[in-house]
Image (tube, rainbow over all chains, first blue to last red; front, side):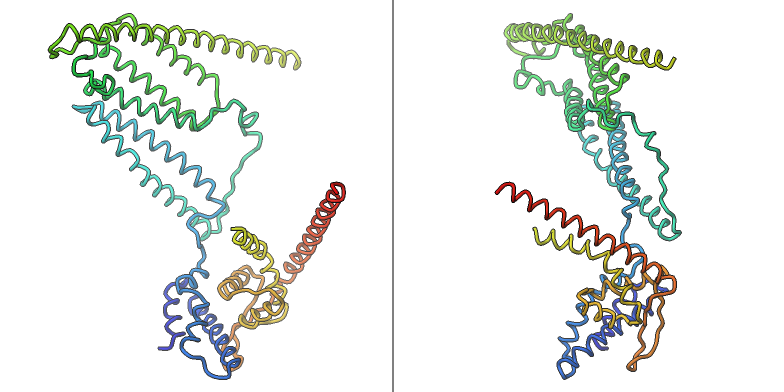
Amino acid sequence: MDLLGRYLDAVKPLLPRKTQNDILREISDDILSQMEDRAEALGRPLTEDEQADVIRKHGHPVVAAARYGTARYLIGPEVFPFYWLFLKIAAIGALVVRSIIAIVGALLSADPARALIPALIQVPSVLLPVFFWVTAVFAAFELCQSALHWKLRVNWDPRSLPAGGKPSGSIPRTHSVAEIIFGLAGFIWWQALPSAPYLALGPSAHFIAFGPVWEKLHWPVLLLISAGLVQAVMNLLRPYPSLVRNRVRLLIHVAGLAVLWVALRSGNWFVAAPSVDHASQAGAVANVLNQVLFCCGLAGFVIGAMRIVWECVQHLRESLAKTAVRAEQAIRRH
Amino acid sequence: MDSELFENLRLELRRGCLVLAVLAQLQNEHYGYTLRKALADHGVAIDEGTLYPLLRRLESQGLLVSEWREEAKRNKRFYRLSGEGFPVFEQLLREWRSLNASLERIATAGEAGTVDKETVSS
């Protein structure tokens, strides 16, 4: 079979069935016309190399056939912005849900500290099925759209957009991402501490141990970290401050201060390790540590309390200003 | 990088004009190969991989009609503007002329502004 016949045979199965013969005849005619023109110009029949050169200009069979395809993209430009937005939301949502499931599953296992890290490593694997399903659904929609001549119509009204657009005081997404990363790291660290005290004490874990107060504080602190994480995720998804969110943040700070107060009252944070040889020396070191930490904790408590008071004053001012504006508007209306 | 950017912009600029050029040329009947040659002779080179799918698309949109006929001992598909295609072509041509005139005015005004600034600075 000649080169042209081989080329057409390679293109044929890749063309739409209904029009393939028609297209092939046209391609064949175009290539033959080009060959004839070239042969006439040269005054002799074309060599195989020259014929191959003419055919090559038509492109690889896959490329040549693809030009006649109906849809040459999986998701078209009209649908893509919605696909991309939905994919981002679905990916973040799946990561959050999967992280929570992993953390709760690890906490309920026999050895939470050991189970947590492998469980968290598995979390990103959820992204692959999310990507697959979201893409499949949108690709199917695109296919239906081109096959059934649907038109994507999004009914929207500019008046339904948030008042004032993006507020100037919006929460930067980079902050939220950093909060999520550090929050997760903090969560893992805190959860691993009871079984791996060297993560906080370093080499001194050989002769110093955590005091009994830590058992009492473990869950409240874990809860506080989790609350902070949830808030960071919320800020990432909708980075606009609101009254409710500010109040929740204030509540978390107050709860944090309460936990710190309980810790300060106990004071006995570190004790000599039970199996240590020089218990009295270890006890002395633990005492020094307790005193230093008490001073730091007290300073932290005072600063935290002042910050909360300041935030409360700010809230009160904002609320009063809003009330005044509303009252003024009401007076004007009447 | 600059030449690549220019090439992309040039292709983008040409894309819309190709449809108009094909419609204009098909006021008279042509088959694919002679159409391509005629366009190239007028300075609008278009490769076969772009032209034939474009012809099919324009035909499916009702702007062109085609028929297979024998010429020079071979069957060829001849294309021409359809009855429905003529008014669309005329509208598009008007639109292109108006756009071209606007662009000319904008470009001339821009050049004049540049010359004024140069005169002031010198």
